Length: 592
Image 1 (cartoon, rainbow, N blue to C red):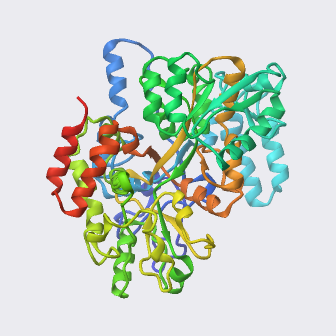
Image 2 (cartoon, one colour; image 1 turned 90 degrees about the horizontal axis):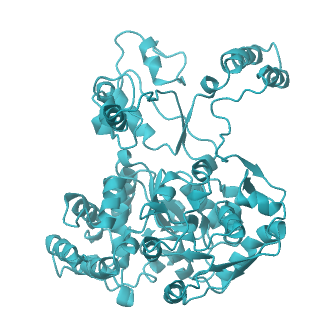
Image 3 (cartoon, rainbow, N blue to C red; image 1 turned 180 degrees about the vertical axis):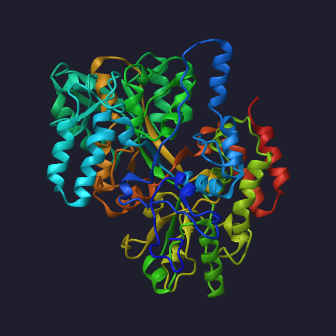
């Protein structure tokens, strides 16, 4: 590669390889590096690694203190400043690195959706540094065909010996049942499949009605037929008002579907909710969910339930056929998005369709944009602190997030009708000019529910398309803003536990996956499991997300999340108040 001209152009290897490069070559000038791309979007952006783990043999306070220090990126500061390795910690940011090479590698790593250790280093020596090595040599050299090689490797595996990544004794192993869904080995669902709970009834309450009831019932068929357990849905549109009455009266349903985690948190605080992690192993949960979903399930020191399905918000819709005819390309970075906006303006058109009018709820669309920018300009820890009220709206982080979207909204060249039209344009009407011929605006950011407001008869993939709202800072990866439903358990019986385990599988959301309307939360869900092209495409976008966070305004106290935050954004966008005044008023409204 370093000859002139190069006799080969690409080399895949770990970052240690630079020590073998010719003396004097410089990163950024003589050589560069890029991530080996994924093949199937269903598997995200995985990263193969080798690394060091600190293990503790003696338990004393001072040893514990050092172990805690090792959980911070600063504990790897020598390597971060001088080069030679990367910090494992997801709280490490590229600007913490002193060498350009490591800084660039850290930016690539920040976008990884998963990590796995070098498999050969985890396998028994007879395989990992024995038959696996020699077998690959035989295969590449042509000495043996692939079938012969893999058979010989399998035969070399020591009897009764598992690799270091083998199934643990925590019950995290899974098997696909004859019923067509994965089953936790040794769990309650496995017992249910053996007929131990046949004839029992589990009640599920929730807010969905009409088509969503049909989708839920459809999702339960496989479970009911395989276990003999009768799942009875007893919810409806009055759920949020009725659930408190039922719980207070001692008549709680076995399980309830909560679209508002804040409401659930109150019941958790009262000790009314069963912690599913008391019987579902952490290993199983980590297989089924991105860590962000597990983090968001934590309330008042326990797991409050298991996430079931969700709608994504970090989406930008566009008039596909006309977009392509105009020669525009879908942006994959923030810089590319800004360049697209400027190109549309240069062509004499307006990039964005934006409106926040929504009756008494006017302003909520602006809170979504604030949440998107928070996820793209600061850490998840700061986002969580903001939700809790410990990071004030007047903080530099929150103000910077608001100013980030203001640079678009307050530029009259970027928004159809200019800034003045935003607060008077209904959120459901806002995207409609995209479908005129020619389009009067080209981009609209909104959750996937917005398609129900699109003109009748328009088709996804032809009349409109969707892309992910790109990240701004590589240090914060590819975050996804969501709203979703969490299943919470009020009564602990074996058959109820079995259904909760089923809810940890994507098949439990099968009605929505086949018919449309929502996405499965589970990271084991793959795009091919979706029956509708739109949801399949959304699932492919979601598969590349590095983190998830729930709509912040839905988690904040009502006085703020659906009160001062909404009205404050309206005042700011309309020009009634400046940003400093607005954030001060929101902070002052937070319940003491």
